[in-house]
Length: 588
Image 1 (cartoon, rainbow, N blue to C red):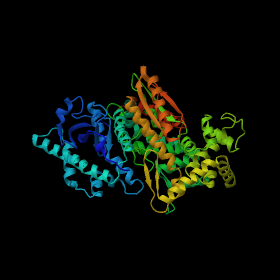
Image 2: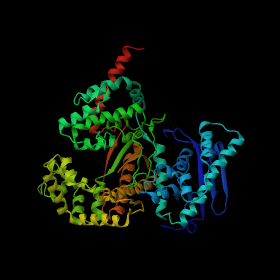
Image 3: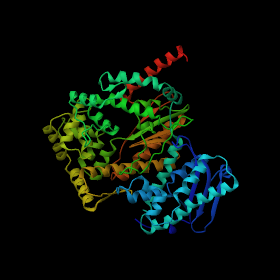
Image 4: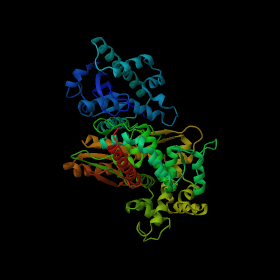
């Protein structure tokens, strides 16, 4: 890492906005003021709310010769979107570069604020009390006196001052990874474009669900719990659930205290391994979701939420599942529907992580299997789980076994884990485990080298510079999948930046998928452009192996309803009709 921006840009603008918006981010921001200062000439721009609204473009250059610098630039980008200003050509986010520096060190979220980062580098900081007082003044008011406006502008300028102090220190310490930092900055900026658009939902139906939810909960629990018997007076009973697990022969992770682990992530992984748990998992997730009514949906019917980019160890987005409809119970996604005159397309890379594993390892047999069009069937054949002429239609069970093994092995699954996931004996799990090793020796040799190097150096780095520090005693299984995950995250970031720069409208990202929105008369064209960008972007992260894409299109009136959520959707819609019918005939 290292470098200096002085030789590359004629102007370097440190910028900062102050703005007002709901705490759940459900509405676009209302910009209050802007302060921008050019690093070399010291020219400063200060603009307050009324003047900001009159500007059709930024009051400074955002072209190829200029660099825009900020700390957590998604906030500035959201104000650009609200004002209808163009996308800057070059963006440096000091927050993103800080996250690269500290990833894996276990510092925690409170060490990622501007105040904390300044302190980390021994730079002066604003008092927390003053910062809180000014934020309250900005958020709680919509009119300010002339003196208050000057005070707010001075406060805004203090963050510009902080950026000016932080930039040269981070550059001098080699903590700005030129030019890859500009890609991360562009991605952080692009997340604001995604958030500004938001995911369109059926707002009327959502409000109807909220209005009837108290009456619906009991009926929903009663219907679903018929097959389990684990609720008592509408409350989940741990003892009854433990008894049901024993009756079904399902093992379950436990806490050191001996209590069952009941976090949603545990439920999610267990429901994948034991399909009979799926309806119960949907119920528990639904109850948690609707009790909090946490979906951040604006008055325009758009689900907006902070993507929380770069906050996972792999660099993938880590949005709140309670605010994000794509991370909520599967049936709730039925609320997603295009607005009139528009279509939606959910585009995802096909078997992205397996393609990255094949391409990065250079295993010719695995690459050939991916290019066959069905990597899971190819694994089944290569590992001699299925005959050479087998297809998805003729040998679905064998294909599913191969899929479980190949995906699980990327995560460091053991033979015992394979046996548990497939419900087979440990001996059979060992056989499948060994068969995969024998089928793909080049891949396994590469993966051993990746793990050995990580354990030796205590550091891992993805192709575009995202890195992981490994502290303490390294766990080979914990780091085994990091390269595939981190490369997948960087692939997504590269594609998103190119799509936003191409003028495509994105609503959301989800792991290895992107949601696109376009007018109906442009949907086919925009979808083709998006898929081409995604597939071209993949080449840089797989040593030239093209990762295919597939798309699901939604037209007006259609819903994003997946098979695993269909049963609960039908149940909830039926209960809603019953409750609304009762209310119609028994008005209060």
